[in-house]
Amino acid sequence: MNRRAIFLSMIFFIVSFSSFAQTSKPKLVVGLVIDQMRWDYLYRFKDLYTEGGFKRLLSQGNSCDNTMIPYVPTYTAVGHTCIYTGSVPAIDGIIGNNWYERSANATVYCTDDSTVSGVGTSSSAGKMSPANLWVTTITDELRLSNNFKSKVIGIALKDRGSILPAGHSANAAYWFDDGKWITSTHYMTALPQWVNAFNDKDEAGKYMSKDWNTLLPIEKYTLSTADDKEYEANIPGEKSPTFPHRLSQITKNKYEAFKFTPYAASYTFDFARQAILNEHLGKNTVPDFLTVSISSTDYAGHTFGTNSIEVEDTYLRLDRDIADFLTYLDNSVGKGNYLLFLTADHGVAHTPGFLKEHNIPGGNFSDGDIAKELNSNIETTLGYKKAIIKVMNNQVYIDTKKLDSAHADVDAVKKMVIKIMKDKEYISNVFETNKVSSETLPEPIKTMVVNGYNDVRSGDIQFVPRAGYFDGGKKGTTHGLWNPYDDHIPLVWYGWGIKPGKTNKQTYMTDISATVAALLNIQMPSGCVGHPITDVIK
Image (cartoon, rainbow, N blue to C red; front, side, top):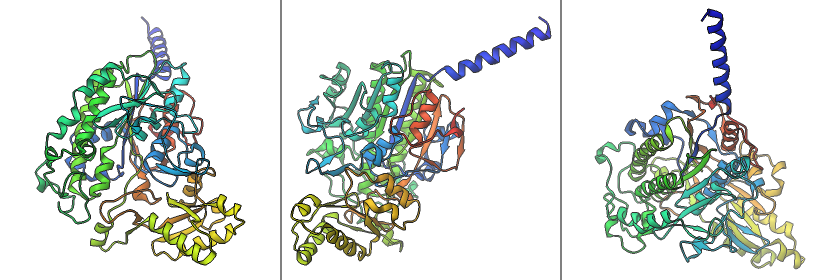
C-alpha cells in the first residue's frame, strides 16, 4: 500500500472514530449526592483517604472546585431538586423541605402525596411522590429522549433524596422505613422480588449488631476536636456522644439510630449494587440512570458537628465505600462505560459552641420563639390575634387572608414585623419578599433570595441571619443560609466523556443537569437555567 493510500486510510479511521465518539453514549449514568458534604471535605481528609475513592475521582476525573448554590434556603429537598432539574425554587416549586401552603391552609412536606399509597409499608412514610415538583428532571428528559426505553431508579434513605432526583417518570424510587426499602404506588403496586429478598435479610439489623468504633486508631484523627464535647448531640438511644458507640445495645427505634451511623452508607451502596444487578442497569440499548443519595452523612453531621471525630470517621469510611462501588461499576458496567458525578445538596455550618471556643461569631435562635414574640407584640400593639402563621425557611408567613377579611391594616403588620426583626442581633437584613428587587442587598445574597422566592409558596417577610447563626438548638448544627459554608459544594465528574482535570472557574449547582444533557445529547429539563460546563467535557 502506497503512502497516499495509507494516509487516506488513516484519515478515514480518524473521521470514523470521531463520528463514533460523538454519537456513542455511556451505558449508565450515576448521580452520587453526599448529603451535607462540604466542599472542603474533599481535601481536608485527603491524607487519610485511600487511592480508590475520593482520590481516584480527583486524579482521574474533573473537579469543579468553585461550585456554588444559587438560591436560598440551602436545604436537602431544594438541593436534590436543583441538581437534577437545573432549576431554582422560584421556578420548580420546591422551596424547602417543608413550607406553608396557603391553598391548603397547612404545612406541606416536599414529597407528600395523599393520593398514593405505600408499597412495602402500611405507614404514612409510603405516601410520597414527586407531585409537588413543577418541572422535569434530567432523568425525566433521558426517558423522554428515547420513548422511555432508559431505566431510571432512585435510591436514598430519605424519601426526598430518592424521589426528587428520580423524577416524575422513573421506573422506581426506593427509600428507607423501619429497616426496609419501600416505595409508593406512584411507581408500582408491589415491590420486585429482589427488593423483598433484600429486605428479608435485615441487613440494617445486622449492621446494628456491630458497635461503631473509629476505623483508624483514634490518635490519627488530628483534624477533629476532642471526642467528648458538650455541643455534640447523641445518636437516638445513646446517652453519650463518644466512641465507642454501642449500637448493639440500642433496641428501641434501632432503625432510626441506624441512619446516624456510617454503616447506613454501606447499606445504601449494598442496595445500589443489587439494583444494578437485578434491574440489569447498564445492559440496555440506551443509557440507564441510577441516582444514589447518601443520607447518613447528614444525620451524623447534624448530630456531632463538622469538627467531630464522628464526621471525620464517617468520611473515611465513605471513601472506602466509594472505592468499592467504583470497582463494582468497573466490573459490572465496564470501566469507561459509565458516567458518574459526585456532588452535595448543601454544606453545613460549624456548631455555635465550637465557634464560641475559638472566639468566632455565631449562635442560634428559634423560629418558634420568633413567631410567639411577633404574635404577642402585634396583638398588644395592633389588636390582631395570631397574625403570624409560621416562621420557617427564614421567612415569616402572615395570615393575610384573615387580616384582609377583618379589614385589618396588613401593611402595618408587615412594618411591625420588619421593625421587630431588625432589632435582633442575629439578623443582618429583613424585607418584604416580593419587594426584594428594590432592596439594597449585596450580591450574591440578592440573586439567591430572588431565585428562592416563589410567589405561590413563599412567606411574606424574608430575613437574613448573620454568619454563624441559625435556627436550632445548642447541640449539633444545621444549614440553610447563603454563606459559603452552606452553599459551596463539591462537584466531581468521572468516567465516560469526561476530560480529566480541575477548574476554579465559578460554576453552579444549576449547571449539573445542563452538563449531563450536553454529554448525552438530550434536552435540558423544562425549568433548567444552568449552562453546560464545557471545561469537563472531553
